[in-house]
Image 1 (cartoon, rainbow, N blue to C red):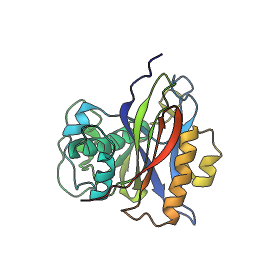
Image 2 (image 1 turned 180 degrees about the horizontal axis):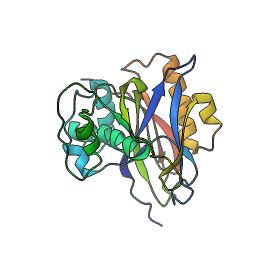
Image 3 (image 1 turned 30 degrees about the vertical axis):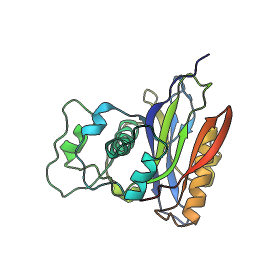
Image 4 (image 1 turned 60 degrees about the vertical axis):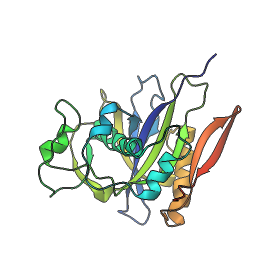
Length: 233
């Protein structure tokens, strides 16, 4: 059986330092989903062609961009930027949370798209506050596969939140702010647990921009952990 080709995707890990320990935002997927039903995951989804053409405020950190372009066929700065915007768009679509900056004047978004909320609230999608903590490709035996980049963002970058996005008929039936240790005790995919562990390690080490990040994928039938260094030339 030929393995399904993974699709480019992105997730966003929102981090809130409201207590002694940082909290992350998790969403419980609808039980009717064919992919990971009822699992708690980070907001995210697949890259959309429109994500390549959205105007933004700020640019990706060069270390982040370099890691996004590493071990990728035909990598470009435009694709790295688009993946970061995918994480922002999917976060809004699943949670109602808008990440960006206010006070920069009117924003124009393509009509009939999720980006219209940015125009309505005069919020500019912001990329310079995003970090990258992991990349993972779904193993070959899954019917749906994604090549997902996991971005990190401080909750201080939340500019607005629309109510009523989580519920019994929504993609996420529940949203929860939990500590990393609490998140590990939820019903989560194994890869989410690995990324939470790596996130803890990276936080303890201080999130240096030049640090290597884990890249999980299957090679020769074995699920491996490599590292993306993002070395700048």
